[in-house]
Length: 404
Ligand SMILES: *Cc1c(COP(=O)(O)O)cnc(C)c1O
Image (tube, rainbow, N blue to C red; front, side, top):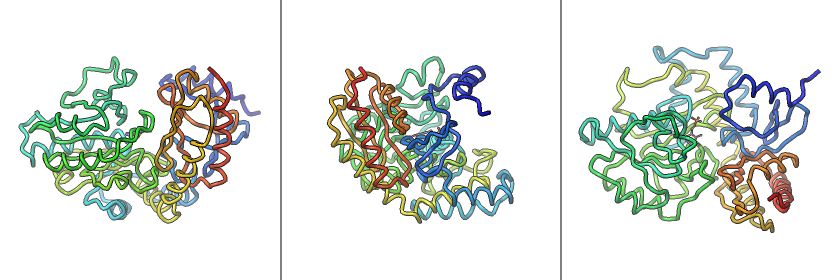
């Protein structure tokens, strides 16, 4: 007999670190936009593992590539070459218009790798005095969970009691180009920013912000690092969110959907100047660039492009946004989004967003609250118009209830 759902949840609580507060659903299977719980109830996944499963759950072609490669060669370490790394580099560089690729595993490691690379570039190319490099970041950022990264987070939950932290970071408001201009010094080596702040609640900067940021970075010889770990790979209806702004980053960070959710794969993309400063022995990772990761990532990129998922994200994102905006509910204060990166902001009087996520779960939709009053909606990019319409109907029904 299958154990009851409460048993899985109780044993997790008993044996696991309690660093998450999941909704009370235990999932055991996924396919495309759908996931099923241990009782066989089906849900539309409107989180997509924080945009790691843009290609849909258990995409058959990525699965096939993974199984094939897993039976052939999984890990060599970078002490030797492998036959998947070069094609992965070439295909990713060609797709994104980058010169060089540094393969690594998690998103946070990509951010750390970028920080190390731009500091080194600052000392060896720009001529900043050793130990003085400054990196500018934004308030309400989310770049991951390592110590260097949480040290420049402004979210107290993220950083409290984890210090002491690494110096060399300056925090400015997001969306304020003037603040960037004022924060720049001769020792500034980089500006690290998300094109749209995801974890902060899908915060889209004012138009004109990024073109001005690009101008300032170029003018002061500062590397613009765009963290596209969540916004990249089709989520916003373009391959990279920077394309909405008509700019190009100097350093681009990818992760999450780079493997379609099968495996942790991330990458730093850059020009020759920045990644060229890393010499043998100066940076690395046992699993970074392993043949299994490369084969999975190649298949994940192919699925995204060949199956028109990026165009679908643009079309269904527009449909979803329009649908959400047509909901007449006095619980809603704002609906915003770009592509399939959407958020519904609730009035504080409506009560915590989590309660509405629980109602949505009963209606067969899994979505995640963020910051008390925001419901984030980010389904896999393979969602169909009918599924969007159905989701909008459920969300409308949930949000017209008064749960305050
Ligand atoms: C998820 C995320 C990260 C961290 O990725 P991990 O794989 O969890 O380390 C970094 N930046 C952004 C914008 C993210 O959304």
